[in-house]
Amino acid sequence: MRFRQESRALKRKALDSLIFTIEAFNSPHEAGRATRVLLHLQHAFEMLLKAALVQIGDKRVFDRETGRSISMKKCLRYAAESSVVKLVDEDAGTLRAIDIMRDDEQHWFNIVPEQLLYLHARAGVTLFDELLQRVFVEHLADHLPARVLPLSVDPPRDLDVVLNEEYTQIASLLQPGRRARHEVRARLRTLLAMEAHVDPDARVSDKDVTRVERGIRDRNPRDQVFPRLGEVATAIDGDGVNLTVHFTKKQGAPVRYVSDESAPAAGIREVDLLKKYHRSAKELADDLKITVSRSTALRRHLGMEKDGPYSHLFELGAVKQRRYSDNAYRLMREALDTVDMEAVWQAHSPNHGSNSWTACSLPGCHAA
Image (tube, rainbow, N blue to C red; front, side, top):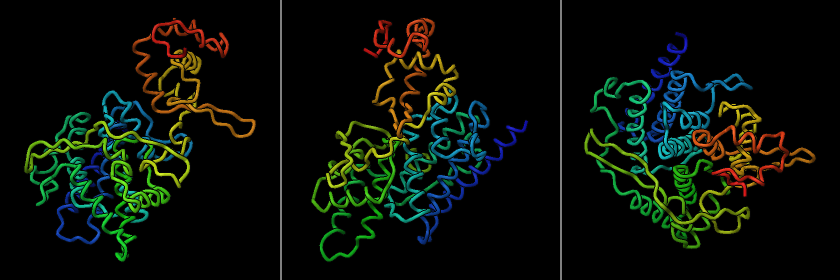
């Protein structure tokens, strides 16, 4: 009973914040409008995801160490892992981008072009309605009239056109004598935030802003300065109050990661390995609901005990610890549905020694 009451309270907060989002978007007053839209939209989804997680009861919404409710990032991870919420990568990317843009608005400043604000607001309403139906078997129309939605006199345009226009505008502002560098950097922060649609580890740092600004000053094309944006697209259906917007993925230009800030590179660099490889072996086993020993055997079977997309060995003096990424979790979760765990255990249990996995001959083994 307690959890249902908490879920209802969180859902009510989510709906209230979504209504505030819509009011702010449709407000005729420009002062602070984008800030209010992003603050309320991000809050609406954090509350809705927590309401969903409390409702289904298969994930902890309070951090064991701090005793406080989990972060938005962890909400997204749990929602993606949930068999009920089923948050797909594209939708998680939309929420990551909204969260990063909100973070800049709340703690610094950025400039979000009207078309990008509209696309994210409308995609947010579309996703909010879908999550309500999926988890609570309710429609957004049950809580507010269909006419009460973000409206724009500027119909949604192709995302590539919008991004090219913004990139051209930034390049123009960087021309000698314009004295608009603060505006340039505010606009660049939004484009960097957009890469969160396809990069779970995306973040906006001042060094990244400086680096992409230099790339534009050097007259590099958009697909070289922001290759990740080439992977983002929108699917728009319907019109008027029945309009739906989804952000989708497509194949973009290859991305290069470098540690030298003087070198030209992608808009987002892979710099914080602890964020990417954030799961300990025990946390990985707990999330998979198997023992640590069986988790070890499965990791050996899948060839995860070496640096790569699934794990990284961190060394601090004499202390060494291997940590694992969300990619490791997903691969192991899928493997649990297909492999014979008893055979995996016989071949790779910790009792067989740390090097036994190299001789794996089981079907599906990736260790060779």
